[in-house]
Image (cartoon, rainbow, N blue to C red):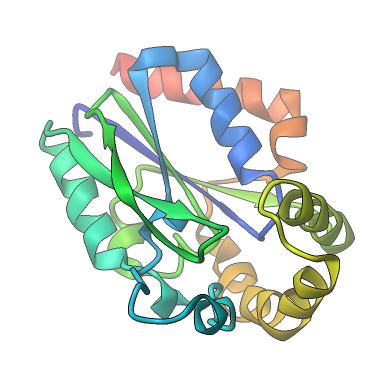
Length: 205
């Protein structure tokens, strides 16, 4: 095993991936760095805000996964990276970046991180957060309306036209690649304890 442990957390939108990743970060502190696939959405500054709002953000082509893979390789080699930052209100990348350190544990979370074979093989432990579809859409409505300034109508339309079809095509089928399946995400303390123990065991080798 490499000196650094790479953990992937996948699952549907609103499944609890971010909460689970943050729970792990609480356990490992500055030994852990967190990456989000969402921050690697392709830059779309050539389009108007209205045009960007109509893009399919749940398809693999929406992401600059090549850059993410390059950054993972840099981190594995022990070099810090400048991670892009995605602005959900503008549907585009921010002009600023975020420094991510090459710590012992690198956690990557995102809906589509198991879909890309090159990305998948760079993950030492693969976790899939399995949450009921009704709960996921309710969480997404609350998050997008309260945190991202979206209207209820736009959230529902996006869910029906792109989120659900893309989930069925590019998220759910790749659950089979998971080493660990976690029901409920960050609200499952027993699963979190098991994952923390597994990480500590791997790091002690």
